Every structure is written in C-alpha cells, then in structure tokens.
Amino acid sequence: MGFKLLSTDLVTQARRGQLQTRHGGIETPVFMPVGTQATVKATTPAELCEVGAQIILGNTYHLFLRPGLEVIREMGGLHRFMNWHAPILTDSGGFQVFSLSKLRRITEEGVHFNNHLDGSPCFLSPEIAMQIQTTLGSDIAMVFDECPPYPCEHEYASASLDRTLRWAERCRSWLEKQSADHRPLTFGIVQGAVYHDLRKRSACSLVDLDFDGYAVGGVSVGEPEEEMMRAIENSERFLPIQKPRYAMGLGTPPQIIEMVARGIDMFDCVLPTRLARNGTAFTARGTMNLKNNPYRADPRPIEEGCECSTCQQFTRAYIRHLIKAEEILGLRLVTIHNLYFYLRLMILIRTALEQGTFAQFREQFVANYIKHEPKSSEDES
Image (tube, rainbow, N blue to C red):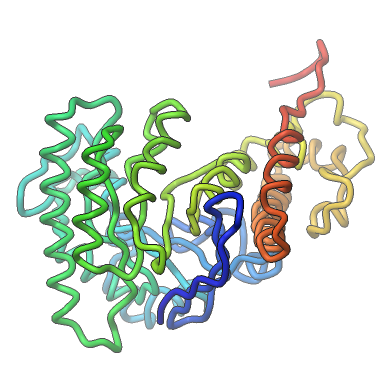
C-alpha cells in the first residue's frame, strides 16, 4: 500500500498519481463521494460504480453511534455491511465533535460530548477513534483532531494545535501496536486556523511523525474563500512530495481545480448530493435550479452531451415535475447527475495532466463556469 507520483504539471503544482489500498488502487486527483452513515445519500453502490466512484467516505462519529460497532463487526466490517467493495476513507469524527460545540467538553484525554440522537454521554479519544476506524475496516483512517472555529484568536488556535499534535502522536503510537494486516493507511491532519506560522508548525510536526498521507483540515468553516486558499497553500508547501495530500470537505468545481493547481490530490464534499436534494444541478456552465419555472416544459436533459444515466433518459421538464411533486425519484436523478459531473470532472483533470494541458483546461473551465440561472419574473424558490 502506498502512493506513486506519476507526473507533475510544468506550469502549476498539479500532480497525477496512484494510491494503492487494500481494496484497490485509486487514480489521483480524485473526488470521494461522502457516505457519512454507510451510504452516499440517495444512491446504491452499483450506481456509485456506474458514475465512476473509486473511493467513498464513512464517518467514525455517526457509525459509532448508529448502528454501533458491534453490529458492523458482526456483519463483517463496513465494506460487507454496505456492499461496497472498493476503498473507504473514514473521518475520525473530529469535525463532527467540532460542530457539537454546545454539547462537548474538550480535555487532554479526549472529548466528552452528548450523543445528538438521545443526549446520552459519550467520549472519543485518539485511541478510541483509531480503534473504531480499524474495526470498521477503513482503508484510510484519519487521526483524531480538533477543528478550531472561525474566527478564533491566535492564542486559542495555538493551544488547540498543540493538543491536536499530541493527539496525533497518540494515534500513531496506538497504530504501531496493531498487526500490520489490520492497520489502515493513516493520514495526519494539518490544522492552525488562518495563521501561517501555525500551519507551518502543524505540517512539519506531522511530517516528522511520518504518516501515510496528509490532509488539510480546518478549512471551509466560515472563512472567506481567499483565506481558505491561503490555508491550503500555507499547509501544502511543507508537505512531502511523495505522499498524498487531501483537502477535507471541499469544494465547488472551480475550487477543486484551483486546489489541484496548488498540489492537492484528494477531495470530498457534500455539495453534489446536498444541492441535488434542493433541486440544484451542476453543469460546466455553473449550477441550475431545476425548480425554476423556465424548465417546466424544457425537453432537454440537465446538460446536453452528458453521458450520465439521468441525462440519457430524462428531461429537465420531467425532473422538475418530480421535484415539485416531492417525489424521491427526482432527488435521486439529480444526485446521480451531480456525482457523475464531479467524477467526470476529475477524469478530465487527470487527462489534462497526462497530456500536459492542465493550465489551459483550468483557465477555460473556470472562465466558463458561471451561474446558469435563467432570469425570469416567474422563477420559483
């Protein structure tokens, strides 16, 4: 298991690589659909394969609470439980604990919090987070970390980072005691909020621990986009070339292309599925709200030329009808299209890198990606 760097773009810092896991290889740059609760919302594993998913995400926190480790262990691990036979990356639960700010208490040992389902007391530590991910059968596990809020003072961010780095050492120590046959690839998470010196200290300290890959965390938590990109840059520059780099929880199609240009290899984001459930579809020209009245009798597919099963079989008019009628099929059809769009985008990026045309592809795509909302007094929310 490991990462092989195949090529680097001559104009940007974009990279083409391959990541090998126990459940197969992954071509990078790669987008990973989010399957928080052992499912990518509104899709089956077969449909994920059809749209080109190489790897999906699960979440330690949510799966720990429901259905619980005993159930997943008895069912033979997360892959068998959800009938997904390709790689799975699991988040440690740190971000979810961050989002429970009113229900948690952070200590040196870990995080005490109240279960958001029934209010019962729970506890997560670095060791417990790694144990859960190993039990799930994760191919790639993330270290347990604290995600500081935005905005936060330098003093708080520094103290938080110190604790996160100590937690990373504990994750590493726990893993070293486990059998190599059951040990997942493990990624450290660079934190440090918006502060350059903290990002540098975080990245360098994690590199010293020699993880299998490195993620940039604590971004897209409310900061302006320019701050987000700066945090990516201030983290990536201190990470080793020969290890994969993962931007957690990002982003829009143009953001992904810009982060590829900055040397990032792996991405995940809820936008393709979340916006689909609101009737919003992604196209090369931007997003389109299929609830809007101009699509009421539109015979075209969501995106002309798209080869996803939704666009090959259904019209904008029909999908709009389903969404307005609150039929589940409408949300499924848009979800399938959006996931296909994101995964097809990654194929185009990889192809451009192989052909040495990434810089031109980047410029053209970002220039063409505009809001594609018809202007009409009859538009509906």
